[in-house]
Image 1 (cartoon, rainbow, N blue to C red):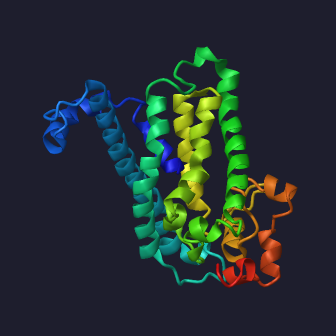
Image 2: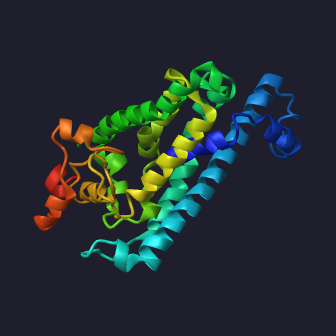
Amino acid sequence: MEVITLASRLRNLSVEHHVEHLSAYLDRTLGIAAAGADPLQLSLARRVLVTWMFLYLTSLALYFVVAGLDYLVVFRLFAHKLLPPKYNQRTDVRREITMSVKSLLVMTLLSVPTEILAQTGYSKLYHRVDEYGWPYLVASPILFLMFSDCVIYFIHRGLHHRSVYKYLHKPHHSFINTTPFAAFAFHPVDGYLQGIAYHVFIFIAPMHGLVHLVSLAVVSMWTINIHDRVSIGIPGVNGARHHAIHHTTFKSNYGQYTTFWDKVFGTWHDPWQWAKNGEPAMTESQIYGKDA
């Protein structure tokens, strides 16, 4: 989901240039102008379509470039050095990519309303440092990460409740031996909900447009990284090994960036201790019952 919001910021919050170039094409293809549509409706229809097209195509480009490079480095060039000793080489890259491409199509559509609100000035994005000063500029990405880490923990944990798991979150957990390409392999509604914090933050707290762009780039790469099973072992940071436990136990390590909320609510499993215990895995039926 963060890759979609990153695509939004790359557009510099304006669709007017794109609308101008696509207007004639849309008139011919959709027949809107010929039908005598209201000018306001015509403008909105174009804005929605252009925004959706741009978000989807840019998200796909970012996904394939970043995930592709990560996969090349970790799973091909330096697999013998980077992957865990007991690495299971049975992966499902083709299905990861197929699900991601289909999901991003819908996730970008769901993101259009908040993106249009941001385009039209309803968010708290700003572009001059002197509006809030340098101290806040430095603090804002930290607040952004703290906010999203908290929100994602509770949404992610909620998606594991047995009443919604099999309808929304189950498709993502069909990938056990994940690769970077699994980063966006979600049910579209699941992916949208887990990324909604990135949209909401700029409506409740000011954030410089460029800082937001950089922050989104970082979290996009992070989301891809936690699915490549390579961790650098920074205390308090929820790395790829932590997330690998989540994919094999279903009820631990819900955090996105830190282990803070997992430790507070008792859902944290230490990956190194887990490895010493033989990496015990569980099945969906053990957690959710035979109807999972």
